[in-house]
Length: 453
Image (tube, rainbow, N blue to C red; front, side, top):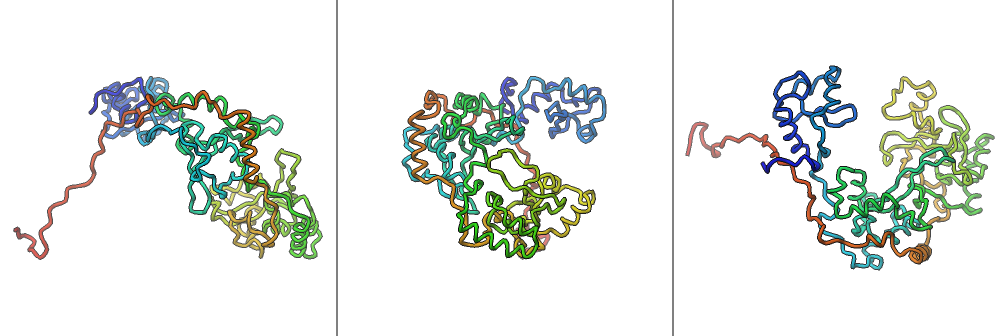
């Protein structure tokens, strides 16, 4: 063992267990229990999930109904210790592989060009990426894109936080900046403020106080999710609207209610306008498949969410492989979860789940949820693209740099003296016990069971 752990620093669970065992003198932490502690650490947690102490094997399996548990929670034996979560020994610091090289100009390097398959390509978020000089806003490492199995671009995280909007009476996810996966994952781990974040702690605090997205007017107030290229449909041309309407009227047949929905131009502002989901809406006569309430079309001028907005429901928790079931209201969509007891639902909901309208439809049958937004009614009829061109992005970047060259230029430097090669936290001192048994030597092939060489 490598000495006694320092209780003034964050500790791994193995090191914290050594200190707690010494405090408890090797016995159970529950008052009145003097049973020795087992060799394997068994932690007792309070109702908030915090570690309170080590207990014996019997009390680790018992229910916490004994009043003595309250005494342990009020006076934990782990008082004054900062214990890291399980698996913290695998955390790597932002400069574990070395400090960032700020001499390289990434804006002219085609290796770091954002691909067109990125969901934020051609949006103000791409402008923010260029204004950050294609670097992580905290650790300043280059942001490198990767191509996922489905063909989409990943490897770059768009960080956001929720802001309360009094007019909409809802929390609005607002974009703060663009980070690397490591910084975005560990951003809320406050126990590592002075250790994991030590070389870039000042930039982290500045990032949380004044995010880079709020530094430029073109990137200020961006809403997470709605700033993607695919979430804001472009407008249809008059010829495209006429072609889609003719197809919808053919699906509606002689039903006046379905014809009314097919002729409603407001549905062409919908996310699923011009797709087979639009045809499913006509087949449902614009009503919820469960309650029968009239579904409301989207309103561009009103930023508040509608109560009975058309919500596409799908089967299964996986959106990529889940099949479409029907169009319902947001209230019913929130109730139909995988853990919901079907027998406790109203009869109309049970009928909907047993025989979804999308599976009765010849247009939306076996339609995957992930492909619903691109399942066009007519192959050649699509909305106009809404993304910015390369020239528009470059013009926005030039206008932003004319006002502010870079975010927090006073922190745009690398202190080579404070860069750690590895995380400064000590690794656990306990060794893993081997569970494999020694195998008996086997006699050579062809030898008799009792013979030896």
